[in-house]
Image (cartoon, rainbow, N blue to C red):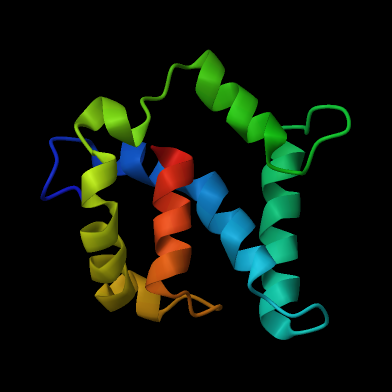
Length: 116
């Protein structure tokens, strides 16, 4: 995405982190190695950014992003009409192939919608 939009790589990664982690966990089977890895990663984030009362382990990081005004994907020019194409590209990205939980284009689209 960074090559297509004038957005800092780190800002894109930060904005996508929460929806990616949530989708990875949702697409993993409890009791599997990948589920345990995703749960462990969420716990690490929660230790640094304590969760909001009654919300999931990533809510503290979400709150911090809002406080720091981290731009959403739409702020960098990403439009809903581009999400299908971006989602298909995401399935072919080398970083996606290394993901502990394989995600479909539909799942990537949901991630992008959440970050839009």
